[in-house]
Image 1: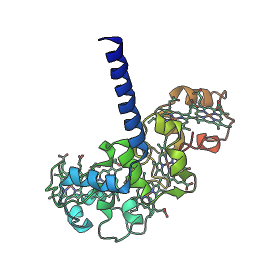
Image 2 (image 1 turned 180 degrees about the vertical axis):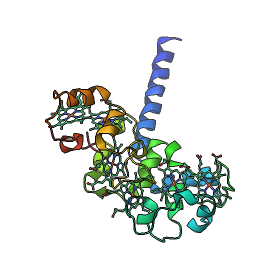
Image 3 (image 1 turned 60 degrees about the vertical axis):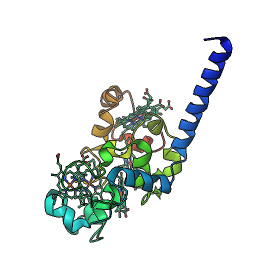
Image 4 (image 1 turned 45 degrees about the vertical axis):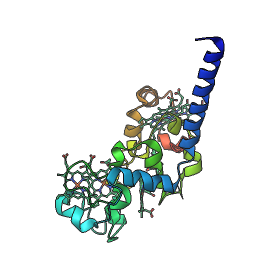
Length: 194
Ligand code: HEC
Ligand code: HEC
Ligand code: HEC
Ligand code: HEC
Ligand code: HEC
Ligand code: HEC
């Protein structure tokens, strides 16, 4: 390659990177709808939770319990499809239905923040600027859609959760060299903005 061709090539590559970076931030609800449609079938429609539960009865949750989304969303007809997209093309195989556990980061953020734009220690605008977001994490690495504890965490405790990825710090914590006794990680750190 000549120097000029190299400059053009790298210039082009930079522009592409910039566009990719920018488009990642500018993910809109329209992008979300298009993504869901592309995944589940452009003309897919909602079928309602009763249909889903006929095959996935283990996801029913317990009435009056507030430790899982299905219960907290009550009898809302399309509650499964709020996170899984319209299900009429699913026909009981892995195709035609979204699984937030396999979705790209922006898509998961949009799905979850449709209802939780800001809630307590979670603020969407801080989340997308955080080291955890930079590191590629999605909500569902820490929270389960169908959980069994108040915070919907994927583990029993916050410490266990952090230990999945920060084992050295948790070890330091347990031996008294990081954080004070009788504290928990999230007393000093907010995982949504650090
Ligand atoms: C006729 C039975 C049936 C119905 C109705 C049904 N499913 Fe499924 N679903 C299945 C089967 C079977 C699988 C595949 C399991 C496997 O192969 O691991 C599956 C897989 C899934 C997956 C995992 C997809 C993946 O990529 O990992 C999700 C999420 C899901 N279903 C959600 C739903 C939702 C939401 C509804 C209602 C809109 C629904 N299902 C309705 C039978 C059904
Ligand atoms: C608040 C969002 C949310 C709602 C509402 C929701 N799910 Fe999910 N679902 C998830 C997430 C996140 C995952 C992937 C990670 C996990 O398993 O928690 C998932 C995974 C699944 C899977 C595949 C993995 C597995 O455990 O078999 C099935 C099947 C499923 N959901 C069915 C349902 C059904 C049926 C409903 C309604 C009764 C429902 N979901 C409601 C978020 C949700
Ligand atoms: C359709 C609306 C809806 C969607 C989509 C949704 N949630 Fe929720 N979520 C709720 C409701 C309702 C509650 C019950 C507590 C409340 O917010 O009042 C809740 C509770 C929670 C809690 C517990 C909050 C607390 O104060 O302890 C967490 C964590 C959570 N959701 C995470 C998620 C994640 C992660 C996703 C994406 C996979 C998601 N939510 C998608 C409606 C939703
Ligand atoms: C690195 C792990 C991690 C990630 C990633 C994460 N969370 Fe959390 N989240 C937590 C922990 C830990 C708590 C606090 C649980 C507690 O105090 O019991 C929490 C609490 C929450 C709460 C309740 C806040 C309050 O003050 O009432 C909401 C809502 C929530 N998360 C939503 C989300 C959403 C939406 C995403 C993705 C956009 C997300 N979280 C990503 C770990 C995480
Ligand atoms: C799924 C893996 C994962 C989980 C779970 C997780 N983290 Fe992280 N954490 C990361 C990654 C990736 C980074 C960014 C890269 C880095 O700095 O190591 C990070 C960065 C951090 C940072 C900033 C480090 C710095 O360089 O300034 C803090 C503080 C932190 N995490 C605390 C926590 C706490 C507290 C928890 C538990 C609530 C937690 N993390 C759970 C993966 C994780
Ligand atoms: C008493 C407050 C406190 C507690 C409790 C605490 N930390 Fe920290 N943590 C800090 C401070 C202060 C720093 C340094 C901040 C900085 O350098 O920006 C730090 C830094 C970190 C870092 C990034 C630095 C590194 O070396 O990678 C991670 C990751 C982290 N903490 C995880 C955890 C985890 C996991 C827990 C729970 C086991 C925890 N922290 C408990 C105060 C605390």
